[in-house]
Amino acid sequence: MKKGLILGVLVAAVAFGAGTYFGRSGKQDLTISSSTSGASYSGGFKADAATKPEGVIRSVAGPAPTNIVVVKDGESIQAAIKAAPKGTIVRVMPGTYHETVYIDKDDIRIIGVIEEGRRPVLDGQKKLNDAILYSGNNFVAENLEIRNYKGNGIMGQAGNNFEIRNNVIAESGVYGIFPQLGQNGIVEHNVVSGIADAAIYIGMSDNILVAHNDVFDSVAGIEIENSRHAIVENNYVHNNSGGLLAFVTPGLPIKDTVDVIFRNNFVVGNNHPNFGAPGSTVSGIPAGTGILIMAADDVVVESNIISDNKVAGMIITDHANASNITADPESDPNSDRVKILDNVMLRNGYDTIPEAKALLLADGKVGRKNLDIVRVGPSPGSCIVNRHQYITAGVDDFAECDFTNTAATVNYLLPPVPPREIKPGERGKVVYLGICTGCHTYNGRMIGPPVQVIQALYMDNPQGLADFIAKPTKKRDDYPEMPPQDYLDPETRLAVAQYMLQVTN
Ligand code: HEC
Image (cartoon, rainbow, N blue to C red; front, side, top):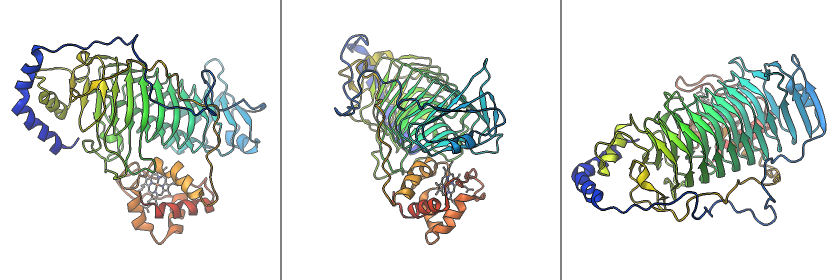
């Protein structure tokens, strides 16, 4: 958080703090709502009549293919996928596989076979960048163990209708599970740990369910970024620097995050020292944050157990007050319409940051040893129920919510949706959106340098850019090395280079 803005608040606190405190404590009526009765949330995603699912959807990838091939220890998963027709289940037997697997066909399922606890292990030996990169639709990955990659565990690049479940992913680079630019996907029952950015990162995607995952020892636990209509429920999120995050990263082609439900999660002891790459967005998360909402709209926080997060149970902020953020004139910087329902909050904020202490003082809350919820910057239209339960700073102006639960919303999944339409000439754009924006934003530092900096370097030299991404060399001391994109053919590399050089935001 920036010092200047917070200092202004501090001065106000000294001037008015005592008065507000005594004024309030005398005669405040409590408004008490029950979470088991009362109205249900009616916002959220509305499927049109044609796509409206019948009953509860538990899978999105369509019917399972009948063609099955088996990969045994010592064989190559990639070779099997290359040979397989579209519509194949690739069964992978227990063993160790040192490879990167690319899937650009539709209807491929990689299903690990677990025998007496022994899984197929994809081991990057800290040499390979990615374990699995898929751009096909209706992709399923199950029962795998993924270790020691430098870039991504499982990354999706514009594939729709994906299911990623029952995988164990550890020490695998920047993003553990990272569907980028996908619609209609499930990420469930995964165990993800030791990730240097987000363990589960939903990027620029729609209609997503993230459920029943165990996520720990990472910088960011579960991150919903520049995405719409996501439900994050029943996850155990512990010992990360920040647990659950809903935010807008500025400078990406999709400008908002809207309609996220965080419910029934355990968000416990997220106090891991922040080991995010210096200067990256997540390196700005104060270690000790349970839930972080930054510039995301319509985020509902319901029935979570949020405990022992030392900075705060929940931080709501705008872009102006966040560190490592370069504003984007096309993104609304505020977290609008945050909705805080009943949650169990215990022992949060016991070792908080000075900025948060100042905000407590500004609210006239002197001598509090804990802090559940802190809000900085505007968040118009926000509401809360049973506010008296929590120790809060900056949320006194939140209204009462006119609902107490989200019971009427089961999930936002759909029957299989059509593949993303790629018109002729759009290849460069889709690769830019699906791959490059995982690490590059237009105007700020993400994992890699800003696109503006790249444009200045390569403006008249798209071929030079295309050659660089095929075989990157180390350029900057304070950045990690860029992973090679040599799996893209030369024509596609040139198309994405040309596209990157002309984007304007
Ligand atoms: C996993 C993260 C990641 C992804 C994905 C990624 N980059 Fe990068 N990129 C980086 C990092 C980190 C650097 C800085 C490397 C350095 O300075 O040594 C970089 C640097 C660059 C540079 C600067 C080269 C120079 O001469 O300074 C270009 C150009 C570039 N990336 C293009 C791309 C394109 C195009 C894509 C998409 C096809 C892409 N990148 C995808 C992380 C990534």
